[in-house]
Image (cartoon, rainbow, N blue to C red; front, side, top):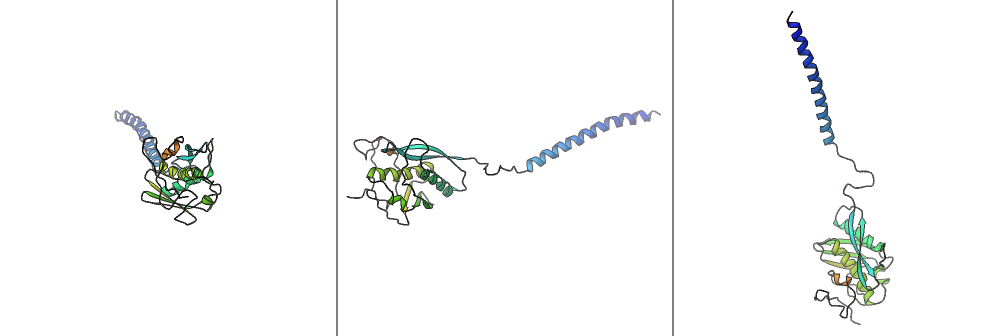
Length: 207
């Protein structure tokens, strides 16, 4: 008769242990399943988020100024460069003035080593405002925008309608151009003199 109480005690301990073990196993399985599931990004959005860009526009018609802009995520650097140029061609959203002639479009973009080549439509040259200052602001708003957003790009080649030897009224674009951030400064007595004492050379067409 003494054996019956022992069985009762054994079952009363074993049942809660089995329930706890089952509950613990279910929790482990759910956690494992959750870790294996790939989260789905909301429609129309990217998990990487937007990208910040710096654009150069004209300020008071005499110098370049920076304006921040958010662009959509892009797959590679060429696509990112196209997006940045599209924003530049869309014009400023603040108090600054657009530099690139209205109606200009980008037909192609290439990145080769440390140089980017941009193919503009004929509106870039045909719609350019007269005067060397307007040409400088338009051209270097493009060059500086590319260089500041893509530090690995040190030179920018601008072509127009397939022409690789473009010469505007005052500026020769037949060679690749390096950025010139001195154009952000107010005009000085010597327009070729940088604020740090160095000089910048622009290939100007002889008159």
